[in-house]
Image 1 (tube, one colour):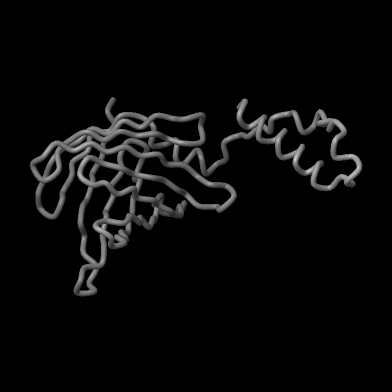
Image 2: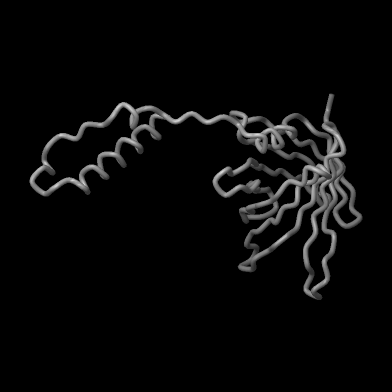
Length: 188
Protein backbone atom coordinates (compact mmCIF):
# COMPACT_ATOMS: atom_id res chain seq x y z
CA UNK A 1 0.00 0.00 0.00
CA UNK A 2 2.89 2.36 0.76
CA UNK A 3 4.29 1.73 -2.72
CA UNK A 4 0.86 2.41 -4.21
CA UNK A 5 0.66 5.71 -2.27
CA UNK A 6 4.18 6.69 -3.36
CA UNK A 7 3.31 5.85 -6.98
CA UNK A 8 0.14 7.94 -6.86
CA UNK A 9 1.97 10.84 -5.21
CA UNK A 10 4.82 10.63 -7.74
CA UNK A 11 2.44 10.52 -10.70
CA UNK A 12 0.44 13.42 -9.29
CA UNK A 13 3.65 15.41 -8.83
CA UNK A 14 4.90 14.59 -12.32
CA UNK A 15 1.57 15.52 -13.86
CA UNK A 16 1.56 18.82 -12.00
CA UNK A 17 5.16 19.55 -13.01
CA UNK A 18 4.53 18.67 -16.63
CA UNK A 19 1.59 21.03 -16.96
CA UNK A 20 2.94 23.96 -14.94
CA UNK A 21 4.33 27.05 -16.67
CA UNK A 22 8.13 27.13 -16.91
CA UNK A 23 8.53 29.87 -14.31
CA UNK A 24 6.76 27.85 -11.59
CA UNK A 25 8.66 24.53 -11.93
CA UNK A 26 10.72 25.24 -8.83
CA UNK A 27 7.73 25.92 -6.59
CA UNK A 28 6.46 23.27 -4.21
CA UNK A 29 3.64 21.02 -5.38
CA UNK A 30 0.66 20.52 -3.11
CA UNK A 31 -0.93 17.08 -3.25
CA UNK A 32 -4.68 17.10 -2.67
CA UNK A 33 -6.31 15.01 0.03
CA UNK A 34 -8.13 13.03 -2.68
CA UNK A 35 -4.83 12.03 -4.32
CA UNK A 36 -3.48 10.84 -0.97
CA UNK A 37 -6.43 8.56 -0.24
CA UNK A 38 -5.94 4.98 -1.28
CA UNK A 39 -8.68 3.56 -3.47
CA UNK A 40 -10.71 0.77 -1.93
CA UNK A 41 -11.76 -2.27 -3.88
CA UNK A 42 -14.33 -4.93 -3.12
CA UNK A 43 -14.32 -8.44 -4.63
CA UNK A 44 -16.82 -8.81 -7.47
CA UNK A 45 -19.19 -11.71 -8.18
CA UNK A 46 -16.52 -13.00 -10.59
CA UNK A 47 -14.00 -13.07 -7.74
CA UNK A 48 -16.51 -15.15 -5.75
CA UNK A 49 -16.40 -17.75 -8.54
CA UNK A 50 -12.64 -18.09 -8.09
CA UNK A 51 -13.03 -18.26 -4.28
CA UNK A 52 -15.06 -21.46 -4.73
CA UNK A 53 -11.74 -23.19 -5.42
CA UNK A 54 -10.18 -22.21 -2.06
CA UNK A 55 -9.48 -25.26 0.08
CA UNK A 56 -7.65 -28.58 -0.09
CA UNK A 57 -8.42 -30.93 -2.96
CA UNK A 58 -7.57 -34.59 -3.56
CA UNK A 59 -6.98 -34.97 -7.28
CA UNK A 60 -6.88 -38.05 -9.51
CA UNK A 61 -4.84 -37.29 -12.63
CA UNK A 62 -5.16 -39.17 -15.92
CA UNK A 63 -2.28 -38.16 -18.20
CA UNK A 64 -2.98 -40.09 -21.39
CA UNK A 65 -3.72 -43.30 -19.54
CA UNK A 66 -1.14 -42.88 -16.76
CA UNK A 67 -3.02 -42.38 -13.51
CA UNK A 68 -1.59 -40.64 -10.46
CA UNK A 69 -2.73 -38.68 -7.43
CA UNK A 70 -2.03 -35.17 -6.23
CA UNK A 71 -3.04 -32.76 -3.49
CA UNK A 72 -3.96 -29.21 -4.45
CA UNK A 73 -4.10 -26.51 -1.76
CA UNK A 74 -5.73 -23.22 -2.78
CA UNK A 75 -5.67 -20.18 -0.47
CA UNK A 76 -7.54 -16.91 -0.82
CA UNK A 77 -5.49 -13.76 -1.28
CA UNK A 78 -7.74 -10.93 -0.10
CA UNK A 79 -10.83 -12.35 -1.78
CA UNK A 80 -9.45 -11.36 -5.20
CA UNK A 81 -6.99 -14.16 -5.99
CA UNK A 82 -6.27 -17.76 -5.05
CA UNK A 83 -2.70 -18.94 -4.68
CA UNK A 84 -2.28 -22.65 -5.09
CA UNK A 85 0.23 -25.44 -4.67
CA UNK A 86 0.09 -28.82 -6.33
CA UNK A 87 2.02 -31.82 -4.97
CA UNK A 88 1.92 -35.25 -6.52
CA UNK A 89 3.41 -37.39 -9.26
CA UNK A 90 3.44 -37.00 -13.00
CA UNK A 91 4.65 -39.77 -15.30
CA UNK A 92 6.15 -41.61 -12.31
CA UNK A 93 8.19 -38.63 -11.05
CA UNK A 94 7.58 -36.20 -8.19
CA UNK A 95 5.73 -33.13 -9.42
CA UNK A 96 5.12 -29.73 -7.87
CA UNK A 97 3.24 -26.80 -9.31
CA UNK A 98 2.29 -23.30 -8.21
CA UNK A 99 -0.45 -21.07 -9.51
CA UNK A 100 -2.18 -17.74 -9.02
CA UNK A 101 -5.72 -17.36 -10.37
CA UNK A 102 -8.19 -14.50 -10.29
CA UNK A 103 -10.37 -12.17 -12.28
CA UNK A 104 -9.16 -9.04 -14.06
CA UNK A 105 -12.07 -6.56 -13.95
CA UNK A 106 -10.35 -4.21 -16.40
CA UNK A 107 -9.96 -6.86 -19.11
CA UNK A 108 -13.09 -8.73 -17.96
CA UNK A 109 -11.30 -12.06 -18.09
CA UNK A 110 -10.38 -14.80 -15.62
CA UNK A 111 -6.62 -14.98 -15.56
CA UNK A 112 -3.81 -16.97 -14.04
CA UNK A 113 -0.20 -18.06 -14.14
CA UNK A 114 1.30 -21.52 -13.62
CA UNK A 115 4.83 -22.84 -13.03
CA UNK A 116 5.91 -26.38 -12.21
CA UNK A 117 8.89 -28.62 -11.51
CA UNK A 118 8.96 -30.21 -14.98
CA UNK A 119 9.41 -27.12 -17.13
CA UNK A 120 11.18 -23.75 -17.10
CA UNK A 121 8.15 -22.24 -18.84
CA UNK A 122 5.71 -19.78 -17.29
CA UNK A 123 2.17 -20.43 -18.52
CA UNK A 124 -0.52 -17.73 -18.70
CA UNK A 125 -4.24 -18.48 -18.82
CA UNK A 126 -7.22 -16.39 -19.86
CA UNK A 127 -10.77 -17.62 -19.68
CA UNK A 128 -14.49 -17.08 -19.37
CA UNK A 129 -17.15 -18.48 -17.05
CA UNK A 130 -20.39 -20.04 -18.28
CA UNK A 131 -22.82 -19.67 -15.38
CA UNK A 132 -25.47 -21.86 -17.03
CA UNK A 133 -23.16 -24.90 -16.99
CA UNK A 134 -20.78 -23.94 -14.12
CA UNK A 135 -17.90 -24.26 -16.56
CA UNK A 136 -14.67 -22.32 -17.00
CA UNK A 137 -13.26 -22.23 -20.54
CA UNK A 138 -9.63 -21.11 -20.70
CA UNK A 139 -6.73 -20.86 -23.12
CA UNK A 140 -3.27 -21.51 -21.67
CA UNK A 141 -0.14 -20.23 -23.39
CA UNK A 142 3.54 -20.76 -22.72
CA UNK A 143 6.80 -21.17 -24.58
CA UNK A 144 8.53 -24.55 -24.39
CA UNK A 145 11.86 -25.16 -26.15
CA UNK A 146 11.37 -21.99 -28.19
CA UNK A 147 7.93 -23.02 -29.43
CA UNK A 148 4.64 -21.52 -28.29
CA UNK A 149 2.43 -24.12 -26.64
CA UNK A 150 -1.31 -23.45 -26.59
CA UNK A 151 -3.68 -25.62 -24.58
CA UNK A 152 -7.40 -25.53 -24.02
CA UNK A 153 -8.72 -26.10 -20.51
CA UNK A 154 -12.35 -26.82 -19.65
CA UNK A 155 -13.26 -27.09 -15.96
CA UNK A 156 -16.74 -28.10 -14.85
CA UNK A 157 -18.00 -27.65 -11.28
CA UNK A 158 -20.98 -29.98 -10.73
CA UNK A 159 -21.08 -28.76 -7.11
CA UNK A 160 -18.90 -26.91 -4.59
CA UNK A 161 -17.00 -30.07 -3.60
CA UNK A 162 -16.00 -31.46 -7.01
CA UNK A 163 -14.48 -30.28 -10.25
CA UNK A 164 -13.25 -31.92 -13.42
CA UNK A 165 -10.65 -30.34 -15.70
CA UNK A 166 -9.91 -31.54 -19.22
CA UNK A 167 -6.79 -30.16 -20.89
CA UNK A 168 -6.32 -30.58 -24.62
CA UNK A 169 -4.11 -29.32 -27.40
CA UNK A 170 -3.84 -29.57 -31.15
CA UNK A 171 -1.21 -32.10 -32.19
CA UNK A 172 1.23 -31.85 -35.09
CA UNK A 173 -1.39 -33.59 -37.25
CA UNK A 174 -3.86 -30.75 -36.61
CA UNK A 175 -6.17 -32.93 -34.52
CA UNK A 176 -7.17 -31.86 -31.00
CA UNK A 177 -6.24 -34.45 -28.38
CA UNK A 178 -6.91 -34.73 -24.65
CA UNK A 179 -3.64 -34.42 -22.75
CA UNK A 180 -4.82 -34.64 -19.13
CA UNK A 181 -7.97 -35.01 -17.07
CA UNK A 182 -8.17 -34.05 -13.39
CA UNK A 183 -10.99 -35.26 -11.13
CA UNK A 184 -10.88 -33.33 -7.86
CA UNK A 185 -12.74 -33.80 -4.59
CA UNK A 186 -12.64 -31.24 -1.78
CA UNK A 187 -11.03 -32.66 1.34
CA UNK A 188 -13.36 -32.49 4.34
